[in-house]
Length: 168
Image (cartoon, rainbow, N blue to C red; front, side, top):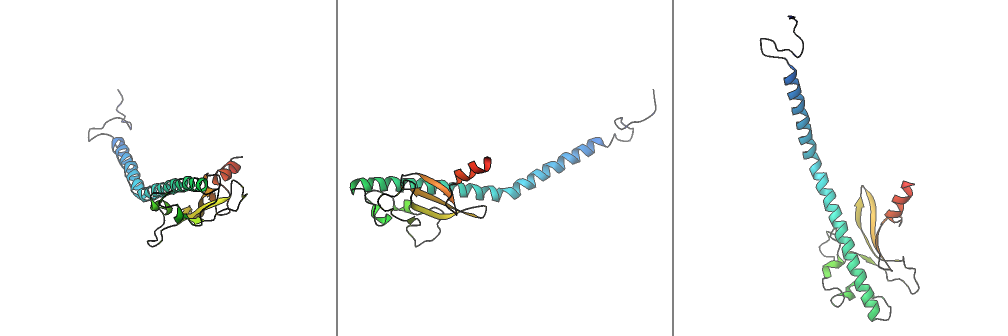
């Protein structure tokens, strides 16, 4: 037998250094993961809150769209002068007229409302929410005359259309 001692062979004084090196490396990786998770938690919570508020805003505008269609059916195709006219007959909950992102206490309606003129195209914007922001870019959630709720950028381009054009 050879008396030569290699890296993987144990010496009489306590073994090789490799188990210690591997242990310290694993510990460092675990610590880095924990620090990363702690630092990312506020960003993840902020993203989840933004997604919730946009979903709730979209649902509010869908309810407003349904109420507007019912109102128009009862009033010969005419739109109401204000969104408040929909309450309580067509909207039982007035809080639907306020975006969850809106922090103004005194404002009861946070959506911009513009009744379209007769003969307006189906994609004419009737109700618009300007309170959303994604990565510093202004974004609008809009209700069109045909009842569709879509998200647009600050130039009015639907976000779905922008995604499709980038993918080409």
